[in-house]
Image (cartoon, rainbow, N blue to C red; front, side, top):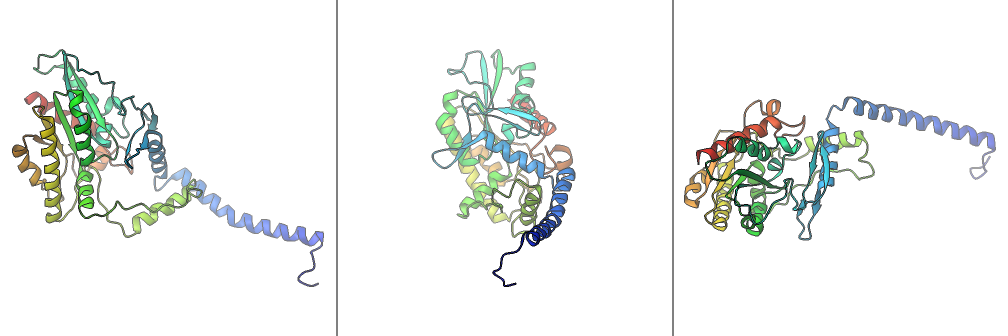
Length: 335
């Protein structure tokens, strides 16, 4: 029989059976591995998928190439729902002008002040509001209102732009800004003119499987990537780079205070290095810049066990937010 001679029907059927057996033999181990990964989830892939879905639900790209929260959006993360108000924040509506009987605290921040992974009632701005209203401040006002103007992924440039564009218009009596590790590292990357490193991602048509996600995570862990924490554990930076970033942060907060005028500005500084040192430039420039800096670090050896919201997510949980609220409330009462 020549190579071009067509197979008779019995031979074709036999060939198809052999090919089917080979395909099943190849697919079966992959299916079993996929089922095992979904059942045991050793790399906590479900958390990564949930975070991506939540970000897609609540975040939008802006015309200037940045990002913001989608007004009116709803999303669920770690079993808690986030509802975005018409003003574009996870916070109750803001009345303007401010009612005369309200003492207004404006919190400006990123995913921490947003309450990433916790219920809005457990996020530190809402905890602050409850505690302050339970025993009101000596301000002569009937109630305290805490506004959380926070967007996951924001940093110092966003804080400054928000205060410049909207901060004064909301008529706050005091402004509190959270300062965390990635505010520092993002400024260093910007100073080095180094774009944020994009994670290794497989094509979208492959990423629906847990097996493909494990490949991604393995490449990310063992690839040539510097590991730097984004939240409340200690970070390691050489003194010169830390000094440069500290000076940039100082400039940003000094400018923010100029924009706010007589409105008090407080920086909740959570940054701490492996050597236990703080950002000396921020500590030193607070008095010169006319703003207050308070120590709000949650860094501790057992941070992940005590305060992390997820197995692979270092954002603070409800206990961490309660501690942040305690620190902020103590400062406000001391004033």
